[in-house]
Image (cartoon, rainbow, N blue to C red):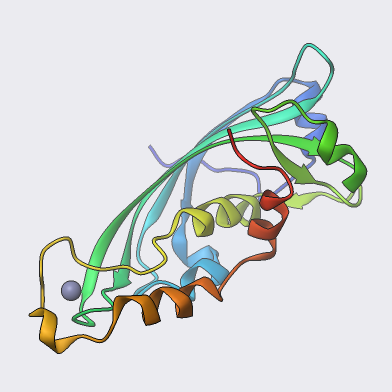
Length: 173
Ligand SMILES: [Zn+2]
């Protein structure tokens, strides 16, 4: 069922109230994600729970799934990529608090008390799960017809989102 999600949210307030949000967003509403996609078709299923943990850290647990179309870097044809994100983000209002977060969290830095564009938060998470070098699982072209894989990986790694840099401040696991 298509359910309307709020466009903008106040994450800290949602966490204090322990609210849940479920619904769908169109991939076409995510311009930064679109830069890596072959078409703007696709729907993202969104399932979010906001809450506060036992030591009063506000957090968001989110599950986002989508099927998007990317261009295979080997044969340059479109391919379907299944995206599935499970994230657990702790809200911090100050960069210095990132280090003190419990292990299970990735930091979500809220630099002002302004409302946050919900699609943008989800978009950041989806971008992080995109394959760096999308390629068909099967050998869509004979090996002799495509250039060195290492070159392509290097190229792809240059496209790092600011959110990815933030995530590296706190290593996963
Ligand atoms: Zn291919």
